[in-house]
Image (cartoon, rainbow, N blue to C red; front, side, top):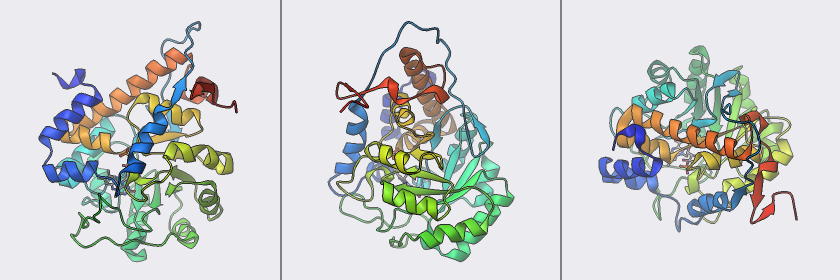
Length: 338
Ligand SMILES: Cc1cc2nc3c(=O)[nH]c(=O)nc-3n(C[C@H](O)[C@H](O)[C@H](O)COP(=O)(O)O)c2cc1C
């Protein structure tokens, strides 16, 4: 089947065939019993839409603005440190695919490419996501370089207070082969990062109102509600379950993004309806690059965006900025009903 006709399921199947087995298992892995991983998708699956047909919406607008950049779609690329397990060219291909897809790419401090190499490989706006366990000196050098190269924002992934687990094992770092260590999350580190650059600072790994408030009070300009795709705490809430209280706590002050378990345009519209500004997509981007390189990444972004348009037409919403909770039903009840 040609790539242009493939859905996400076919792309996933092709990636499974084409990716080295070790890479597939690393990508699909989640902590311990996988309860959080499963819950991410189950919780999204329980939210329903209210169909509307009597309206004149035919070509809804999926574009958004984030960190001053115009994006074609709110389906953004999540930071993944281990694309290189898929192949030597995978990071470059993801960067290229992000540009073709006219989306935004978040790049990980744990990746092999340097801050400059990412910038050279993509026409998409980039957000550099630090891991503070790499030390202040290295982080400072990276974020300052990101600023001088025109990145849209920088930030820190702060949920690796304990290292990522795949099943019962803590994998070695794919960057330098060393054992991974956790790093305490500290509000002062956000203040420090704010002092390093004048770019917006994003904090990723927020799963509740208390942490959201701490991050914003320390100066975070945007948050990512995320349980790291179920790779950190087993029996965590789904990210989509944590989103409403984070929006209530800080949604008027900063843009709130979400990731973990997003597998369709419908999932993205659900997150936006609950207050997210945009959504990051992790493993499906890995499938795209594993199946078909940069074109595969572009295709994944296209599929998600086409699915979003379909949902918007069928719920009678003319664009992403018009999406609200009123289009949702949860467990058969309107979202706001008790
Ligand atoms: C293989 C893999 C590597 C990851 N590496 C990083 C990383 O280096 N930095 C980071 O902030 N998040 C990392 N994440 C988490 C993603 O950014 C994102 O939060 C998660 O994949 C979203 O869930 P999803 O895969 O269900 O879309 C990684 C996830 C996977 C699957």
